[in-house]
Image (cartoon, rainbow, N blue to C red):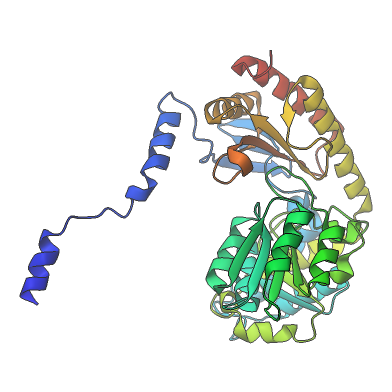
Amino acid sequence: MTDMLSENETAAHVDLFSKFDPLIEMRRNLLSTGQEDPFGLVMERVVSPTVAVCNGRETILLGTYNYMGMTFDPDVIAAGKQALDDFGSGTTGSRVLNGTYAGHKAVEQALCDFYGMDHAMVFSTGYQANLGIISTIAGKGDYIVLDIDSHASIWDGCKMGDAEVVPFKHNDIEAMEKRLRRIPEGAGKLVILEGVYSMLGDIAPLKEMIAVAKKYGAMVLVDEAHSMGFIGPNGRGVAEDQDCLDDVDFVIGTFSKSVGTVGGFCVSNHPKFEIMRLVCRPYVFTASLPPSVVATATTSIRKLMHAGDKRAHLWENSKTLHKGLKDAGFQIGTDEPQSAIIAVIMPDLEKGAAMWEALLHEGLYVNLARPPATPANMTLLRCSLCAEHSAEQVQQIIGMFTRAGKAVGILG
């Protein structure tokens, strides 16, 4: 024991943070010129779904994922206040113990009604929904075939479940089929796709991809986080819009975007789905959502069933902003508007950060997205439109982008 201690005492000290040194240096360089931290903005007051006070100034919000503008809906807020009065601030327990209140069953029923499916399971976040469902249904000896641009929560769910992970080139149907063809006969197979990919705002050819997956006997999970509430005749997402929702085994979604609160969910028609409540670790071993949160979510989801006018207005906003920025000379992530996300491609991180700051000084907040989170090492200014943005605000935004682009030298 003495020898072991002396050996340990003389061993070189390893700083576990050293792996982050390149990122620390990049951030230091970015802020050394007096640049405001694009990942540390504080909103001092939120006025509405589209306006907040940042640095003492009223700022148009164009980077919040509040697609349907439900965060200030009077009915949603009233439901949350009532639940606080009736049930208190939290459950202090897991769903399988004391953490299931009437509100948790009500929000799951609202999801079943919204999607027209038999089963719904609510998680504390959208991240946990992917982590829990994927890691539980695909384990050692199974195969997961997924798009290379999949969200971090999807990748983490794959890793946690210990299945064999087989990625394919983004939105490439032929590449996906090649991967499926090579999987051994009789192995469990799960194909994971997203309706809208959050970085560029592009959609997947779900109908064709799901047909290929079914041809090889794979189950299909589709993450509709960025399309739920907005895309499709009833707001059920890209799978509904492409008329293939009935062929999807699991739909994953979140409350933190169109629903306007926090939480995650999975809906399914699989007859054995309810067993997930006992075997899914990120569901079993975490506290359930507070009563006020599930009450706001239930009210919001039920209102989104009848939000056709809002969906139409959001599409108009998306088309107008996409065309306006393209006409101004910016490089956009998609040729045509495909969702509520408009990604503006920057030459590099330094120019992107300067543009982000120039827009903030104009009174506009957008997301600065950087590698490795972005595809192909791109730096993006990601714009997330809201159904509550007025036509006048969208025109203001185009003007702000144009002035900022000229000021930092991105536009000629």
